[in-house]
Amino acid sequence: MRSSFTLCISMVVVLLVALTANLCDAGEATKPRKPRRRKQAYVPELKDPLAYGNEFVEVTEHNTFRRRYHDLDYEKDLAFYMKEAKANAKLHEPNTMKMLMVFCKDIRVTSEELKDENGDPVSGVNSASDEVIKNAPADLQQMADLVFAYSRGAIKVEWQIEVIKETLHHNTAAKAPKTGWWFNPTSIVDELMEPLAKYKDAGIDFMFFHCGAAIVDEDTRFNIVHGGMAWSEGWIYGARTLTVSKTKLQLVTHEWLHHIVDINIVRIEGLQLWRMHASGVLGFGKNDLGWAGHLAAYTVRVRYFYPRDMWRRWDLHKEPGPKEPFTDKAYAWDDVKYDCWLKLPELGNAELAQLTGLKTLEIVPTPKESYTFFKVAPDETLASPRTDDAKPEDASLNNVIAFTRESAAVLHTKTGHWLFVKPDLANLYVDMPRFHKGTYSPLPVYGYVLEGFKPLIVIKAPASLKVPANELGYFKK
Ligand SMILES: [Zn+2]
Image (cartoon, rainbow, N blue to C red):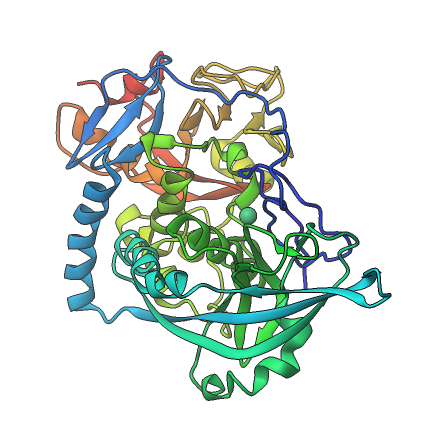
């Protein structure tokens, strides 16, 4: 299978775990070190938001769109979508995702290389405290609520908790005391089989392992790394394995999403619509909407990037049906929106050339850049502004979508007015005629573009509609 090796940049120290290409996260070792210098992300100056139904869309100083939301208070936003999710769940049984949090009460960690003064291997014990175990159900319920509310009631997360009281044994390659080590459950799977035997046929999808903190003397301890790890190749009793040092909402959601977006949806559906440690490429940053950490980006993933019916059919062990072939036809967004990556065709250069009539149209591959560039040779006629120099700072309505600042790119050609829109704002653009005079008829969609892991929905606006000065201009009466 495809290996993934990405590192958590949101934490203080990035720990490289060599030779373990199946790992997906890292955290803080024993002592906080100097924070790494990071490029200042774009912080927009926000204007009055655009009201859209019972939601709002952030408007930047460039009159472009960013996040949509119901309420800028996360708890209120969650409560709003929770209501919708509960109503949906009454009509359609949610898909249950079973999670197990395994507390390894005591783990004896022994260095494979370090010897103490007597020549014995250096060893220490990590223990999970009773308090952490006691607080876990409430912590984990927060994650279950996020997933249920933002998946529109499509996924019901059921948590179970198991405490392994026997002391487990784990060897580490850590070369010095007080260095971090990762607990990889697969490496001691023989020890775990018996205490976890009751879950053999329990249909657990994800097994999280929490290994506490060191409580032995300061000099010889090996600290478990603070953070988490999604093990892309580990399976125990049919479940994918993860390690976490906390049961808090952000960490548990983050590690679980690694399994969803970086590992299993890629494996099962052949789709990478996002990369957990490259949210900046898609324009997402820390504290978006003023919410803690990356909460805003997590909710967008669960609600818009992985739409409702994808969650309903989600299964670790099943592939979806065949994908929609390209036939040059228009789709009603309402018919496809809950499973758009399966029900819409993927559009590459050839398909886009056919749709737009632009023979030289090329989606320039820029997987590491925070933009997608629709390049058109200068001798082809375009009724919309164009640039030949794509930049991440682009904020004008043209053939480039820069994800930190914009929500759409546009190509106005002889065949129509083509918009390439971020998935989380697709239905806003489809609903554009609601903001105009005249009879309402939603705009048709034709497919999606996936350059790198940057998905865009392709929407056709009326040819008679002139390209406005900026994105907000599309939504003026
Ligand atoms: Zn991570």
